Image (cartoon, rainbow, N blue to C red; front, side, top):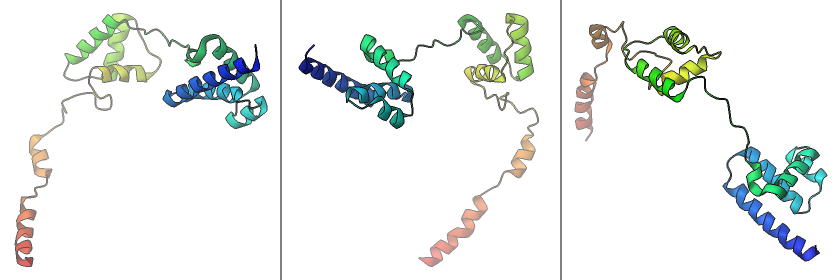
Length: 174
């Protein structure tokens, strides 16, 4: 392979990497692409290590991956964990939550354990179900059972008196 062919392939690779870096929002992918781009721009491994705070193995790995797969090699490969509830089960739980007037976290935990055999380690999973049902987990009911309309009306400030008191002063100033 001649040096002109290598130079032109490096130039096209650099342009492709620049375009990828401009459009990518994931900093992990940008860091990988930037390491490869700097290498193609003839920076030394040592300078890239100090600039990006990465290891030499990191640079070599992503250069090799880019050479084999292109920019698609920078995408994360993890798929996440499979949900404990199927889509149909989750929909049924959300409908169940929607049919109730008052909800408690303990009640949701019991329902999931008894109906589906699911018990989450983290409370966040239950909060996510409340959120999916359109409920706030911080206030798990739409109705405040302690609400007293007469007390609320008594404490509610009225502003009508203030507006009338200020109006004559405004007319006097003009």
